[in-house]
Amino acid sequence: MIKPLIRALYEPSMEMTFDDHLADHIIEHSLTPQVYHLLHDQHKWSQVPVVIQKKLNMNYKPVFLFNMFLKSQNELLLGQFENMCVEVMPIKGVYFAEKYFGHLGARGTTDIDILIRKKDIDKAIAVVKSMGFEIEEEEVPGHFHISYSKIAPDTSIKVKVEIHWDILKESTSNFNVAEFWDGALKVGNYQYVKMLSDYHTFYLMCLHGWRHNLDSPKHYLDIIQMIYVVGHRFNYEDLLRNAKTHQTYKRMLRTLSIVYNEYPMLERVKAFPRKKISRKGHQYIDFIDYQFLSYDHPWHSLHEVGQWLVPNQFEIESQLKSNEKRRMYILQLVNLYKQRITSACKAIFLRWSQ
Image 1: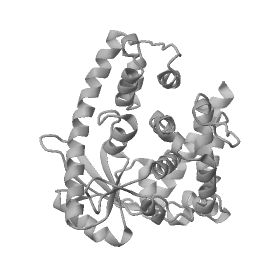
Image 2: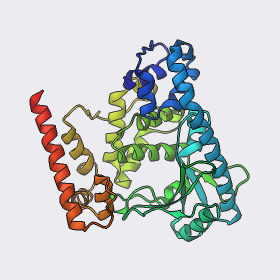
Image 3: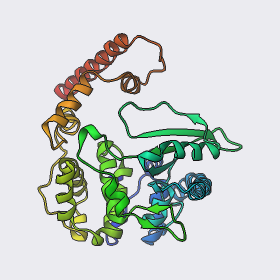
């Protein structure tokens, strides 16, 4: 249901079809802002049944207002970094919505993501805390960011700032984040606030989509929108050549192949010059391909196998969605394996019963 809608949003000649549940699916996948603005941009809003228009309008307004609050927080935060002479780049978030979807309210977001240099972590934490983000979130072991949050005024909504110093685990690539800084663009009269180039933003969004295994239409939309808006400004051969150097080639190839397979109209906008990888196999084959075979170096794959077989406590609690933080590690690991075996048995049973 969502896939035909997305195709129609990018194909002016394609007729849109609606049913009573479409608005619910759009809201469920957090796509209201994108769909709302793309419908207006394509002059197709008038084709939308009034009942769906009302639902989308009601869901859109709070997202837009929250984005306005986030932008004000972003600007204050970036101003503080400038005053402290600390280099910073906002990534994703409200600036991504404005630049690539054309409007502050055209893409929902809940966090403020910034990229800083690793040497400036302590300074960045001080800046973030000076803005009232004093609740320290649990750090993900082996990852490349830390988070601080606060409650938005007059609400119960937690707003989080994620401080990134890299975009990939060092143990899974040969990527040097200095390339992002070298290609960064100047922002207005700022000296220390930079902006990612279109090329590096696209690179980032592809890796972001891969990291989530393209588990939401939002990831597809981000990539599709960038291809339509700025795809003419970069070359796929250059991107894939760089990805081989970074040892992210399989991740980039997998992500873009799946997106192009799902949305073949992209070929008419910007042809993808590589073999297309289908995602129509069994979900466990797809999981194995994503989890263990998306790495260029065999050692990186072996590392991920080890991490999956014996995950750290944070990953176990995340997968179990458990709040029992004090339970012994070995008991949590046993429960995780029980959950995995149960899920696998259910999937096999359902497949054989069809």
